[in-house]
Amino acid sequence: MDQNATIEEGEGRNGLELVRSVSDKHLDLLRPSARYNPIFKGKYTLIRDEDSQLGLYDKPLPCFGCGIGWFSFLLGFLCPLMWYYATILYFGNYYRKDPRERAGLAASAIAAMACSVILLIIVLILIF
Image (cartoon, rainbow, N blue to C red; front, top):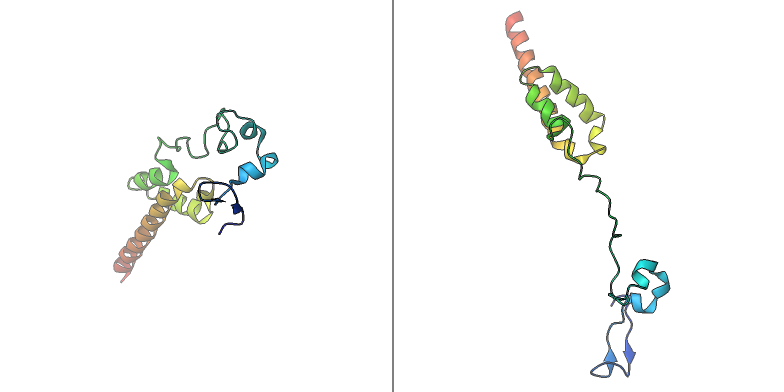
């Protein structure tokens, strides 16, 4: 059973009150906005304040909304150096700023590796 729940005798329908909410027992621990709100009466707490701000990932990604990784991946078909630029960003953990960038940067790193292998094969064929 949960540590925050208590069993008390002599109350409730069958002589037992099975659970008493934490907010009823510890009203002083709640935020003032949840403690004195007449609508909730201590049963529920507010998850966020009324003046909510935009979340970290509500902003659109750069480069026309697709992110640097996917933009570099698409632009890499015209200029393969963009794949290497995105690979440097990927191995430099640029995606920690925004995890939504990770897939595009990884795709660019894979494309850069494939491009390198193809160039290596072409150079080996031309030399030998």
